Image (cartoon, rainbow, N blue to C red):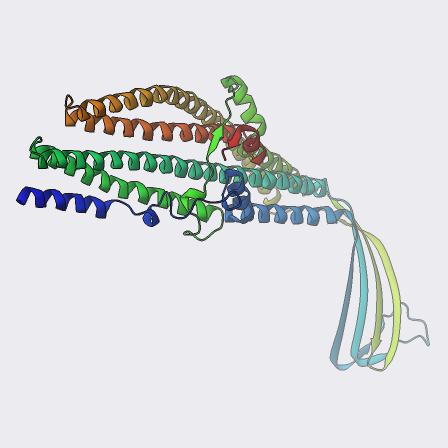
Length: 457
């Protein structure tokens, strides 16, 4: 009687622990309709629209464009208007004295009112103006490279998170199949024991296997939930707004990788990090020109129109125009130190460019090797899953006919689950590896995804 109660209690625990449909994180709701599904392309488009890193990079690009506009404005003359009203203790001349001709005296008043329009234009500044514009133009290019780099990094993050969620969803589905098989085995062992044809240890072993599998399922479901929440944050949705079952599976189209040498060439030509470093070097080189320009005299054209009067009126206007020359004779070493600083900055950015090129080559090597390794793992695991599935089928058949051993069957189910989980991880890991390779070579974009991925219905 005690054994039967124990068996019934175990079955009850299994039924209670078995995930109900509404609690199953792999199927939280009814199957999603096509219009409710979230594809990888949709996730990437949403992320590029709302994620802060890309928005910040685009704002930096806008700022660089404005800086370039300010630099270009120095090619045009400047016109300024000014006005003032001054109260004096004693009357003073309201208009200037241009000569001491008898009978020609200026008006005097305690209040002097002036208005002026000043026009100025730099004729020559030693090339500093052109160098500033060149530096600003290179800064725009660097900002554009930053935008491209942030977009590619974000796409890679979305692909990695999306693929991880799909792999975890398949692993959870495979685990659920194993759990159902273990429950079936528990029932079979309990029935044999009740009929006096089985041993109690078989029921206890099945109990332990079901309990362990149930605990593992909780962990797998929690990991899947976390990945989906991370994906929701990337696309700008509330963390609990996306269910795992709405994610559409993706298949990577088979294609050959370019050689390592070709991949390095691609990276050096298209990597946003390398392009940003190149632009920074060019801007620093222009900065040297700006610093050296201070050694040359500056020549400017200046003209003014001034209207003066008192509180009583008597306004008189006049103009003046001329050429203004300025040349620094002694600055205490400020100009030479400025030039030295600009040259040092150029040397530093040149080394940063070399470092960026080395880093790009290293990233290509890692990504290239990861793709080849993952491809080999997928091929091996496909064979492993086929083999373990056949072993599990045979062991189940032997167990049902009384010629097998329960431990062999349970081990076969565990091996099949591990192989299926590893295969799911490898398949979506290959997708991630290919996206990482495209990122390393500067090719990752929505167009690349559209050309290399297929969305499964």
